[in-house]
Length: 90
Length: 90
Length: 90
Length: 90
Image (cartoon, rainbow over all chains, first blue to last red; front, top):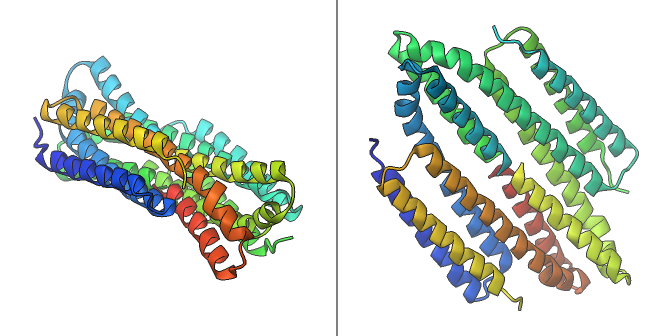
């Protein structure tokens, strides 16, 4: 439904980043430098989540809110609140 | 528009918690215990934000998405994405 | 032991900020604006925690690591790890 | 210096998880489910960072604090504070 090529591209880059971090661990790189790279990966994942949510709000959410199924609308709104709460906790 | 008494109640409790933390600092409490109390305050604030977003989704968002002003809808959806991104960064 | 006047000052400002947020709620301010102010408070609390940890590392931690009580050292290092893990989860 | 086999194992699992998420995107899985999986990956990365910091505190930090190079000690303590601050912001 959405064009996910940008998200997919970012995920592939993040996967490469994570493989690089494994090499750092194997080569016994200084721990703090590894932690910083892991934090950079988490930043990238935050951006990917935001991209996905943006697509979701502009499609599924609009469909649900304009639709005539109140339970479906409630479900979609609840999910958004749940991922927001989870985002706060990560 | 919404009933914010629950949010207000939680904010007052959090303010009291923050005053308690100031006393801990004044009494030279062990730093780690102070940091833990600050983290507890941040957890409470996360719950308050989630409550507020829940109210927002169930009122303003629905109004905007069902309304006939595409710019208003775009603005409301963009804001939700922005607070989600900010939540990831705190 | 440490000079906590800076931390105390920041905590007082944060408490004032939190009282301002309560007024926003009472005056039925737009929810997203309230959420953004809560996120600003959380940012301030992050800085205060970092200040406290900095003081802790430069005093208690050094004392524990240079001392001759291995259990005390273990306890202090474990605590730092715990607040780091908790920081990740907030 | 440390035994990083556990960290390496966790990183490999996380990489596999991330590849699974790419498949979810390719198969046009429901966005919210993808966001939840990304959040699970971020939780795993938090645990890996904490493991790494634990090893760091119990080796490099102790060496630096017990050593006779005050600049090296200062550098090591500053780094720990920096990753703590960064952890708060992710």
